[in-house]
Length: 368
Image (cartoon, rainbow, N blue to C red; front, top):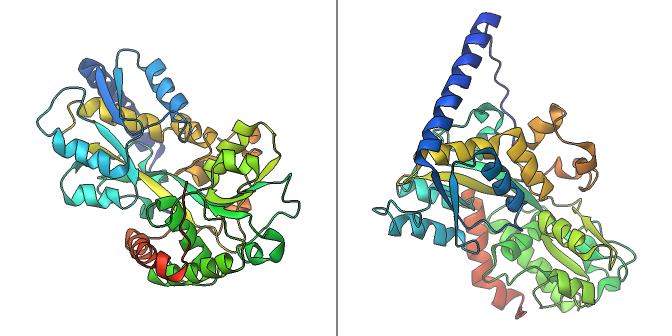
């Protein structure tokens, strides 16, 4: 589980004042350098994902002198790294300055030398085990695996993975993707395994596959990729998906049908995304300014408005920075307290096992 750093800084008031002045001077210098570059290229940031539309809009409004080029909003993490490789010598807008990728892609990009180190001014409030110590990559936001439920059809809302095996949920439970290819679905299997006491990794894959084998054999599993539309139609009235997707879908349905997003009490599996600056960024100062924007209170709350828990969430709540009306839209905060944050190695071990054994163990051909 992520833990906020507990370092205590014993500085005199004078030292604090000097430090603050230096930080402000550096910030002003960075802003000026970024404005001089006048450009920033992002990639794989659809406006509907984690509130990115408003986050990007806020950056543009704050720094109108910087033109933002939004490359390939629907790209995946692997596409982002390939875009850096392909544009090493390209100083134009088609070369991404920054990336937002799945957890495993941060260390991979660092290993290949595709990213450069940078520590934002709020660095100390970011959990230690959610960032590279040198700043080559840093966690930005996370989601927790949850149940998105059509309560017009499902009157007794399941609270645990174990509940999903009950006969009353026959023909109702779906994953939000094909577990042979979809990261979201693969981690849904991991969450099911953790709910049975398995450790994240190969063990969670084995236990999770057994869970879905039982779910499929009981007739409760629907081998269709669950989406907002299929939930509303009643085809998949219970979908195992990231909480931020469920909450976004809930808002989009506008109460028709009535829905609920539940973080299961027997397994709260968290998935982290990470930020990085391209080692070949044509606009490195604008990239750093973008990072400062994302990790500021404003940027972090912008992600939370899009229902992605920002990496500084605990710090923001502790300091009363999160509006109460926003907290009221989320599942209870205590549901997140026991969230499990698997390592890259555990995620990879689980993924390989699930993809290799889904067909032989579960035997359900998940389709659109």
